[in-house]
Length: 271
Image 1 (cartoon, rainbow, N blue to C red):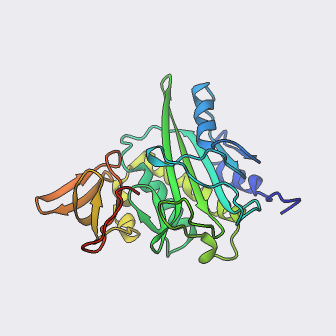
Image 2 (spheres, helix red, strand yellow):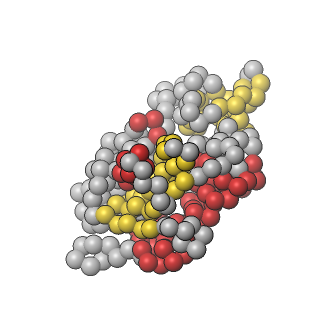
Image 3 (cartoon, rainbow, N blue to C red):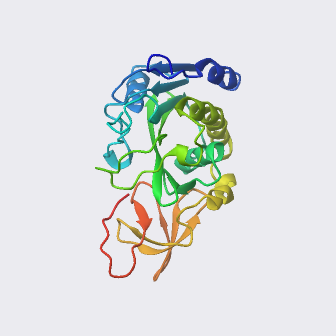
């Protein structure tokens, strides 16, 4: 920290990524509404170069299904670095987009800690608490398809007040890691994972995902009304649920999923 500002390893990240992603740049902003929103605005204005945009403070972070991502500096965590919020934007041309959020989540957990698990389709959990969220958005500009991959990670412990799910912190398992060092660990792995996904799709990652799958073998309830035992994902990343009517496939655009409650317990639908 220098005068309350995090010392970000922008040059080290650029040196690691630029050889495999020509034209890549790194930007650090003290404050913005949302890194995803900013990169989507730029893309629609024709700025399609690959970029990593990091915000020390987000005022209007967004999550899946239009929910807020509450990553703002809080009363409990007044210093910069309580959370890590960033977006990676780049042009991408995969044969099939199915499973991209799972591939991104796998890159996050593999780059950080073996205890981290993936809750389909786009959350990272530590035990039974949420550590990180992923939001992927795309836009077409001319013949190019531009993808923005937003990630928010709790670095320091925080209050659960106002949260749908109890929050975990990365320092619980990696006390020596701050937001800057977590970013340096994660971004080169993420870029390689996205490029590999573009070439090979999700299918080669299926078994690796199952090894980190929080829901595998658990009774789950979906907002679509489907309930049963989670049986991992298929080669396109769809959730497989074994129900009384047989095996059903759930796409990430349709539902949210959480482990089913014990018998007789009321449960809020959603994630």
